[in-house]
Image 1 (cartoon, rainbow, N blue to C red):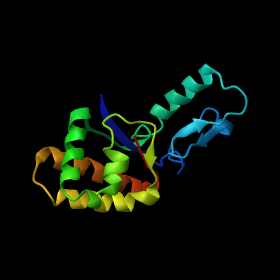
Image 2 (tube, rainbow, N blue to C red):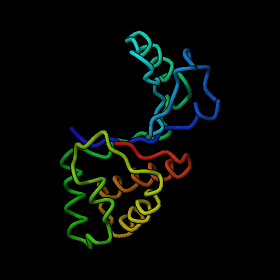
Image 3 (cartoon, one colour):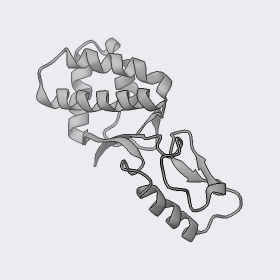
Length: 155
């Protein structure tokens, strides 16, 4: 088990994807993920066709950046490092990213990403530990993609 995060691309929203098989049902949730509107019951066949279309909708398969931030132990290691090195300087990283090594289904809105990027840059300058730097580099890549698209970072 571990912690994964991604940022959806905007290819579909920008009209760079092939037409959706059920364009009248296409919508986007708060994370930027294309979904089917829930007008009545949507059949499994429609969802499967939508998922197949989404996987092939662009060169990114719907995700501009997709990162494995680490397994539970690595996330705990980063959390312990942050807590022992000026934890007040890393409130977003501590409360929204490394609070658990396995959280999912939540996100950081694009409006919070500038703070996350500031904290991540601060972390990058604080250590030469390759594990922590790798984690910080991945979070920075996610943050930059979020800023570029306006989409949240999804865990």
